[in-house]
Image 1 (cartoon, rainbow, N blue to C red):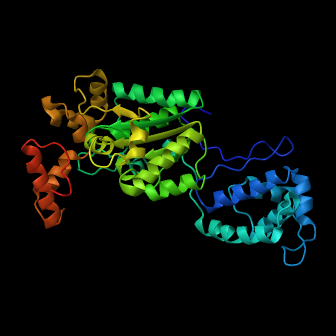
Image 2: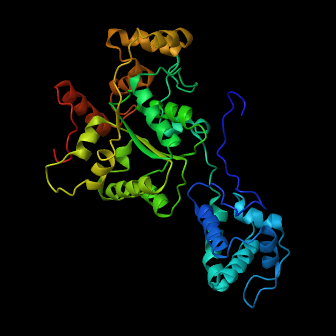
Length: 390
């Protein structure tokens, strides 16, 4: 790979034809992935015949009610088993029926099982696997920095490393080198660079590992239950409390623990505010079984990596970055002696200005009232989250 070239996730079936059994392509959790895994299960149950033998088997005349006689070639078979494309319905069912017969299964039952799965795979057309470098950083939760005109559409600012970056990268690198697993949870207050640190660490340390980003706890649990996550994958859980809160969160935490025990190497990386961490890992109150699997996941695996709030303006790397990027220079000036450079880089002042505009501009009257109450509570010294019952 040339210097600076971004690696693509490897989806090539291995080993190649003639050198041993085929392996399924790497695909994101989807009906297509399940279809390919089902075909490969039949392929293994049938003794992993050669592509030439598979083509001949598939082309043979089928019995009544089964897929008809075909002209299947070795290339067709290799595509059905190893390509990240579904192939035709006719070829898929013909191959499945031939493999079922060889494995001692009922071809009609197998075909009836795979037919709706193929239809789902054809309709879904899942997106390709993407490494961190191929993801839009904003899509992973990284907050862009505003330019001089107040918009945040430019590239990310230069990254300034801090001590926690070395800790995180060391954990990720060790898991990859040792074929191990790691759950790293970056814990810090809002707008302190947690997600950016995770993004930079994965891009630098695991550049060719695909990144999977589930939408919620239900999707995460579904992916794990359907065996949808391969080894050498990064599971991205920005704002991790969204995945591990409530009954669905307990189920997700239990599934994550099982996944980390079963699949290696694997990296699970997340972010969380300190108040969420305290709430989810607290013991000695109420039901002792509450959040049991969440505590086991976070505390039992020593997952936390603390992220500080401040970035020193006099740090040499900060000064160099400010000299090259006017956005960084503006943040350093705005932070003054308070050293809250990161908060200025992540649109914090812009949010304050939106609040100061009053209700019915950026926020509804109800939203503005809630924010105002929160500001006053914090101003009076209450830093922990307010319970719903209050």
